[in-house]
Length: 91
Image 1 (spheres, rainbow, N blue to C red):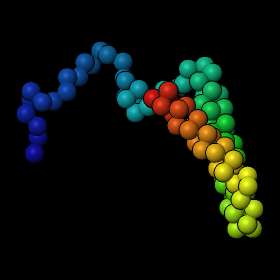
Image 2: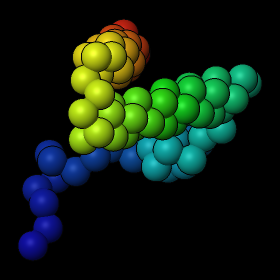
Image 3: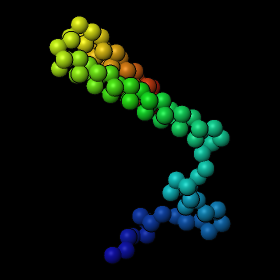
Image 4: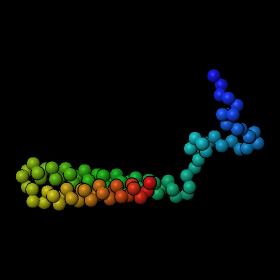
């Protein structure tokens, strides 16, 4: 079933073809791709650090050494809060 004429998008035959822009095939601004890659790598490193801290904290808990256990969990929580803050500021 075809759409009524009033609902069809207007096409200007003299306008340049903007389909590539609509589909997101444009080139990023200079330096933008490197900036996004750096942010991704920093996020991955911090997530790896957080996972390592939680693994060490669980190992210490299971070994019965709970003195500095909360310090490790606190540092891991700070890394998580920093990630949330960075995500919130970028949106």
